[in-house]
Length: 167
Image 1 (tube, rainbow, N blue to C red):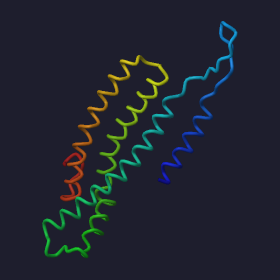
Image 2: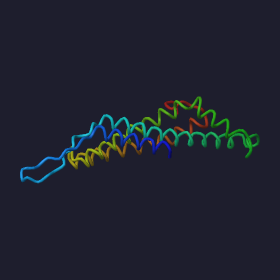
Image 3: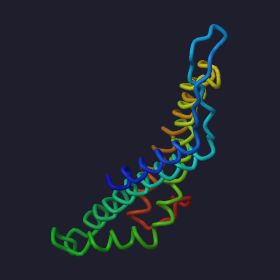
Image 4: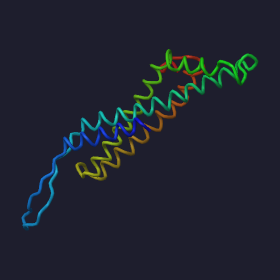
């Protein structure tokens, strides 16, 4: 929650600084507000940071839970309810498996950021509506496949300690 608030304030500040609007008159003499186009490179990096952070948090929890369940499944007699399985799984997730979590999270974050840019371009009518919808549909399908793979890859990372590509 705190990260989302900080990120929103950063976006508002960058948007205020990058997008300038001015009053002009059209050919009929009516006043219109004209704003310059936003720099999508800055917004892409901001979206990456937002989605990446949320994906890392979500996937750390997923990997940690998979490690705990795996510990309880394979050694139920030594890993009871009050055992150190939770701490050891958390420690393994935040140390040796953290690179795998970050890599898988980055893949999804890039796709989510590209989808958000396509949505912004569609709303600003900078590309055709049909093209933007097709791009969003393709990216949505890719995102679904990557998220499905990530779900099972992080189970293998949490239970067996495999690397992301190995899983």
